[in-house]
Each structure stands twice: as structure tokens, then as C-alpha cells.
Length: 142
Image 1 (cartoon, rainbow, N blue to C red):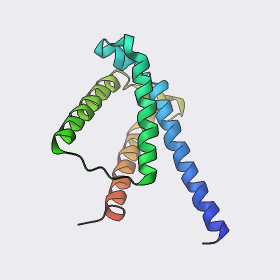
Image 2: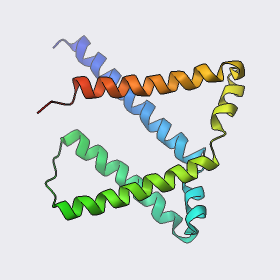
Image 3: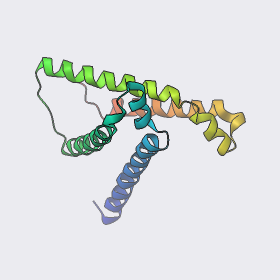
């Protein structure tokens, strides 16, 4: 591999990580997801635990993703993990319904109010095509 190709791959990897990282930070801070989640669950006293768990989880799963780690867990542990993951997604969805007016505000700020449907369709199709690309090219069929 030439130095130019390696530099290009490094640039793409860093750019993708920066985009995802800033999107996550914007999602969690600007939208106020963590405080709203604590308010909905009436656990405002544990907000520092929410913040720590998000940081530890992001670092841990990034590390395991880079190491391509595999976990062999018992069925009962997987069920418990799935239960907690489902609860988290449900609570996150409940918090998101409170701040769902983000897209109209974004459309107004970038002067695309009349193109809001196109903005939504671009987001949906981008997610769908990205998921299809991932599953078709990166997930091995057994």
C-alpha cells in the first residue's frame, strides 16, 4: 500500500470518527437528552451516573470494536443484557419525543422549510442505504 493510500484511509477514518463523535456529543448535549431522561425517570440525583455510564460505554465499546472482540455469553446473560438495552432504547425514545421539534428548527435555520420533506427523505434513505451497504458487504453469510 502506498503512503498516499494509507494517508487517505487515515483521513477517511478520522473524518468518520470525528463526524460520529460530534454527532453524538451534539445529540446528547444540545438536545439535553441526559437531563430529560433523568427528569422523565425521576432520577435526577443520579445524573452523574448517567454521564459516567455514557462515557464508559462509549470508550469500552469503541475499544472492543477496534479489537474485534467476541463475547461468548450464557443465554441468561444475553437476555438480561437485551432487557437493559431495550429499556435504554425505550427511555431514549421517550426523551426524544420531547425534543422532536429539532428538525423543523434545523430546516428553518438552513432556510429549507419548504424542503422539509426532502430533508427527511434524504435522512431516511441515507440510513436505509447505509444499513443495506453494511449488511450486504460487511456481514458474512454463514
